[in-house]
Image 1 (cartoon, rainbow, N blue to C red):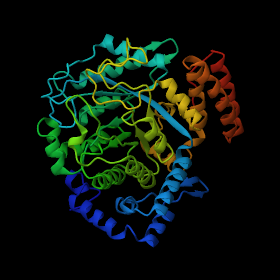
Image 2 (cartoon, helix red, strand yellow; image 1 turned 180 degrees about the horizontal axis):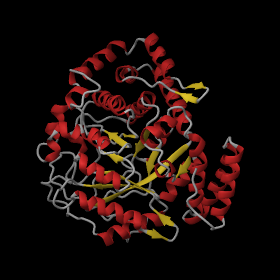
Image 3 (tube, rainbow, N blue to C red; image 1 turned 90 degrees about the horizontal axis):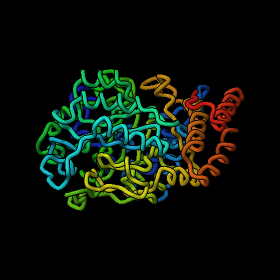
Image 4 (cartoon, rainbow, N blue to C red; image 1 turned 90 degrees about the vertical axis):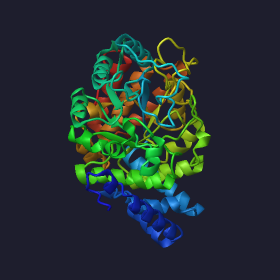
Length: 483
């Protein structure tokens, strides 16, 4: 029985509730009057405190997703753009994945790291190798990483992850520093989540893969990940362990996309109802080709138009959450969805263990890749492209480092006030990138962008402080300013 506040996976992600939601959506997908009411409900509203947005429930948002009327779809896109602008402006946060180990005891049928795959060599980074990877990432200009590793209690115990986080934070190279380490590791215990919190990780990320329990168990036939309830309830344990920034995600293509859409929104509603704060981020990966993995064997693949619609509807339903799109997607697809809700993207990414150090931007090892990278541009090329497209690439980690996480971040974000510090922070970190790492062409374009955008900081005092800080960065006097 559906209960948003239950701590049992099969009650806060109730199968019958999702089926009823899909039935309700089908019944009302042509109910234009209802849809117009939902769009009006989800509109950002200016208040004395700033901007407020109510979002939509999983059932309401499912109606929008089911609607196939071209006029309504354009209205959905327009509203998603409006909400994205209200909460995140034109800022796009940059990050890169860092794969620590591909040892794994699970047998997930969609992942090449599964235990039975004998085609790929197994590799685990040593401290020295982690150091070299981090230096390579710093030399690109990255400040934020998402570390990844397979589930293997012998090769990848929690102590290995903790030591890796400590190593990453300790490395200072030239003007480089990794200021935020997000962690994407297997579901674990409250005690281990507490240790991750003490290690000062940023966001804890765990993809559900699919919310359909029967499909989940078939897709994970053996290994610890086979336990649907333990996996699905992981975010509650993470929050009980003190981690207040968590990131949800499903792997679109494994199950019917409308089922997954309802499921992930129900999970977000559950976290909000129980812990008072929803997901810090929602990721939207799609199944991609990899060693011994053919995405064609999964019969629930979605085209780019459907993918864009999913992203827009998530943005409308959960207006405050960050949305992440990875280099699984090509440049054309990424460009289409940036304005519809995405607020974070990776750049210059490698999905192999030890994929950065010792390689030029045009070289990339494939033997330990988790999946094919569709967007193979360098970080500099992605930064240039974003600015050409009217976005502000941001390397900011200020909120995390100033303690604006969890409900403190969301309380500001939900009324649009987070922008008062995010805009100048984005410009200052962009200036760091331009001064230290950018190509001449990227630097020229970025300097013009900053000169224009700094005048959009509304508070005169804040603007003047930011101008002074920008000059110090350009002069090479200091780095790491933040509001």
